[in-house]
Amino acid sequence: MTDHFFQVFGHVDVGLLTVTIPESDDVNFCVKYYTQLYNISNNATTATRYQMDDLLFLDDDVDLCNEDTVTVDLKGKIVIAPVPQLSNDSSLNCSLDDQAQLVHDKEGLGLILRTSNFNSNFNSSNGTEGDTVVASLYKRNDSQLLQNLAEKNPSGKEMYLVRPAIEKQFDWSLIVILVMACFCVSVGSACGG
Image (tube, rainbow, N blue to C red; front, side):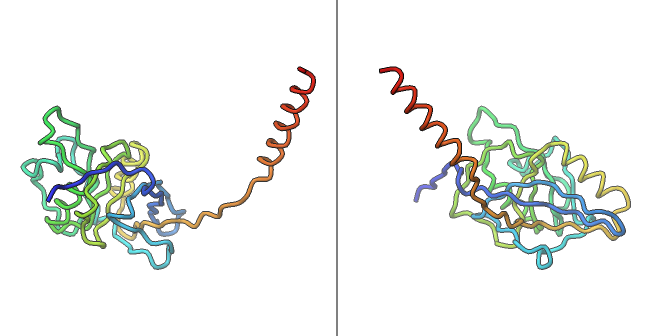
C-alpha cells in the first residue's frame, strides 16, 4: 500500500492558545491546527487545561525528524519545538504527523511548533490519538513570550487551546460597491458609444 501525502489548504483551522495568570489578564496566542490530527475545544470552560510546568521548550538543534537528537524525556510534556529545516535528502524530511507521532510514542502530551512556516504535508491515515495536541504558533516571537510566561513563576498558570466562535456577518458595503461598479460600467459604455 502506498502512502499518499497531500497539501492541506482547506483543512487548516485557527484557534487560540490561552495562558491564564492568577490575578491578571489572560494572554492569548494565535495558533493553527489541523482538524484531522487534533481538534481543539470550541468552549473555553470545557477545554483541557495544562499546567505551564507541562511545557518543554526544545533547543534549535533538536530535530523531531531525527529521533537521535531528542535526548530529553518528553513524557507528560507538551513539546514546543523548532520547525525542522528541509534537507536536500528527502529521506531525512518528515511530515507534521511523523513529528507528532514521535512525541506521542515518547508519551508526550502534544506538539506545538514555534511558527506556522513549515511543510504542511501529512498522511491523513497516520493521525495520532485524538488527545495529542498538534498545533503551531503563528509568530515566532510568540514562542519566546510563551517561554517567558512559563519560566517566570509558572505555578498557578494554566494554558488551554480553544477555537473561538466567529460569527459570519454579511457586509452590505459589498452590495453598494457592486451597484456602483455596474452603474459606472453602464454609464461608461453608453457614453463610449
